[in-house]
Image 1: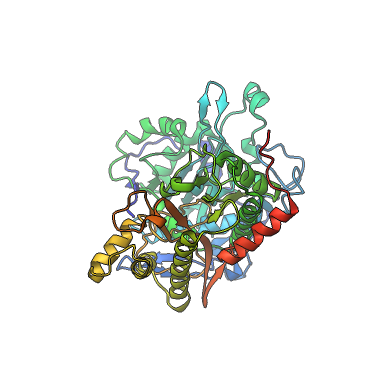
Image 2: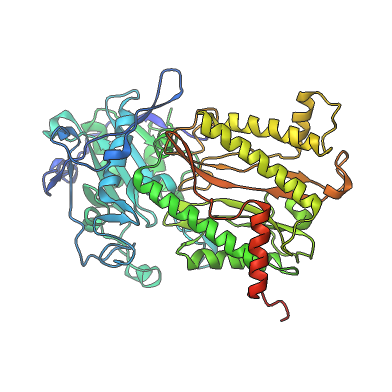
Amino acid sequence: MSCSCAITGKISKVTSSWGAHLIRTWNIARHPVNAIKITTALVHSTSGQLKDTSNWKTLGQTSSNSSKFERTQAPLTKNITAGQPTPSSHPHLLQQNEVTVGISVEEYRERRSLVIERLRQQEGLHHVLLLPATSRRYMIDKIPYLFRQDTDFLWCSGCQETDCVLLVHTLPSSSGSSMTHRTVMFCPPHAALQELWDGPRTRPENAPHVWGVDEGLPLSELITYLTGLEKSLNSPTLWYQHRDPPSDSTHRLLQPWLLEGRSAGLESPKPHLHALRLRKSPAEQRLMKRVCRLSADAMQATMAWTQPGVSEHELFARVDFESRMRGACHLAYPPVVAGGPRANIIHYISNNQIIKDGEMVLMDAGSEYHGYSGDVSRTWPVNGKFTSAQRELYEAVLHVQSSVLVLLRDTRPSLDELYREMCKQLAAVLTELAIVPKHLSNDAKIKTAMALCPHHVSHYLGMDVHDTPCVARGHAVLPNSVITVEPGIYIPEGSPHAPARYHGIGIRIEDNVLVTSTGYELLTDACARHPDDIERLMTTAALSSHGPDLQG
């Protein structure tokens, strides 16, 4: 997948404005030092292929040999007013020393170290990474959309507030420090009236205590700070997402400065951030296991609750309810709840029809749990019993998924190789069902099968549902990454080759998989997949009579 990226450009316009406030940024010994050993990296070889040099096992451990990676550590103290949960304000969510649920301040520092080390492998002696937070967006006057932080910014900082700017830069040799880089969080100004409506914000002076950065400064000082870095670091390389920036307000602030001879040749840090985000740390793996299990349980509970005559929007509401009651923050994306022939619309999200007795429903839904996403699809008959045609197609899709998982277990394929395996297996099962004509050549059979499953079989999964899109699907999958495996068959009404009994049936089975050094771990196995298990689940649920009340 191509990436709309990049901004590495030399900051070439040098001025003499270096202010005293910037000189003070080299005074880095204000707080106790926490040594963090860099133990992981994911780099590109000269051929452009992803090369794994990671070892997340010792993430956050200290070492006497790690002096060049020493970070200033401001204690995460109590009684600080912040614009997001902290261990003192939300002890039921956050452990001490955690910035976000499950992720420690040490891990966030480690991530920033990894990014800087990766950027230092690129051209240029010094580097400046500029990551803006997302701005709040409004659906109508004064009514905001659900806020979702820019993923790269969140991964690097743990900051869940709007309109902040994270700046990470290498240090000049004259700084007198063994540290390789410095991190500053720029915070919007305190506005009492706005905070009355939107809640408190973290003040700049509290940024080190909330996020573990080296310093917090007012956003109004960002341009002065950047201008000073030009002189101190001798025209460093600037990394900034210039195209499609996450914050319009921050981009407007930066635009005049960038246009003063600094915007030529800019590239985005996204490819480097995505390469690092691809593999999950032990803490991230725990979060992914939690959200995938949560998503699977919510899906299964929704399956059990279904009965004929239920509406798609009721099932939408049910899976949302089941997810939140199990601890999800919200659904990770608008779910597909497609009854009957609407299952042939891949991203059907209208969810406004009644599902009739004898029809199936295809649901594609996942939970979001404190920044990490699940993504599960199941297809089941609303009356709890597959027809013979439904079961034949369902078992065909399940066979294809099993074949793809075998390939994943036995080799180290790329996502594209998994897709080719899906197409080959689809062609075989559809030929057996007389949906693909037997007289066609193998290539023609595969082409016909591809038309009946027009989507890929896999994508990366993590903080985003379609995670790390800058990582090409042609790279071999790496241990500690999470992917989906989601074959489907979609037979539209009037399909020219398929027997009439299959017309209007759409089926997708999607599971989430943690790639391991020895194969894989199926993270969504808690949700029934085999048709016998689905029928047993729904029969048991019907006998307990706890389905929806559709009479009123």
